[in-house]
Length: 458
Image (tube, rainbow, N blue to C red):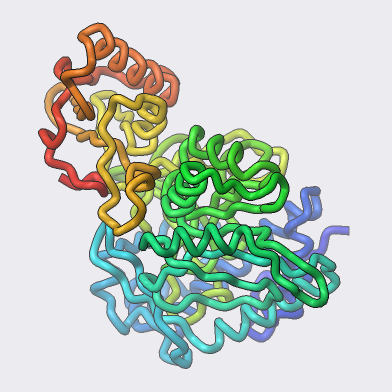
């Protein structure tokens, strides 16, 4: 029998004990699981809006009296929240009743860095919730080599017995330390163990992989069971390279945000991404707030109470482009594909647009295209791994994708034409042939001519 969740939830109804049961049911790939997941999303969404209006000046003013009668299927009628709106709101978007716990920070690589305030209540709530969700699990603690990163400040802490080995991968010494730790056996609870999990940003883990490959220091087959990456786009060829080096390891590719608890993981079945039950995703057009249920657009995310309490983000635009698919994955969840940042894309005449992810996939196997070295003081052999190729979107009457060659004098005219054909073929395949009219520069550019830096900014 499918349980029915009350239409009106009170904060007292969403204790860790109550939600642990519902979340466990919602995680099931069954009719019951799908029903509970949909009901739970809607009821928590309604509770989130009610709490935001009651506890913050920003949402009380933005939603008004109509917001007090909000029901879940009216989400598209609420205003969008941009990064600029979030910065401008200041303290007014934070709960008046939540006790300050700590701050987290965005990196600021794509825009003005944000300071996100978290409360003691939400930290305590999530700790207790995940303690209950882990009850009865028998998996033993993992030894985890994790990237140490102070850029984002403090993070929410969840219960667990894993042994962490934080290592900085932004310096040469960190790579040597990581290599030595991977080859070391540790006595843990009377058993000799080795590191079995690697976790960090996509770029740094790819760079570590290159370092270990170059120095012939591969971990024994099946030593590492999981490689977890997040933070940057991971191309198909990048996933293949990680899988081939870390033999036998599961590659976990995640989308996460400093601004909120909850994100998305790449699915083993459909290779797209599915969002967790801690946020509500939507997609809207490039220039319109209208919801899209299929196709490419801007990602919109709403945090859910009680997982996020101090800084509720309702219909927040994190600045990412996605492609949402109508087809249902075998898991029963909606599928999203990440396409890059909304700050950088090439709009075509027919309404389609080319993204940084499209270009990364198209250029992944073309070594003649220049890569801009990572400026961090890391080993030289790692500086070109996981970085963007040198390209520029040029808005004009005929939109142009301009590319830089690493060594123009060594590339024949025939090979140049071949590169253009390869890129064009991949882009058309990714946009299902509906790419319209655009140009690939007849003259590929010399290093530095496009004036872009290693982040892709001009």
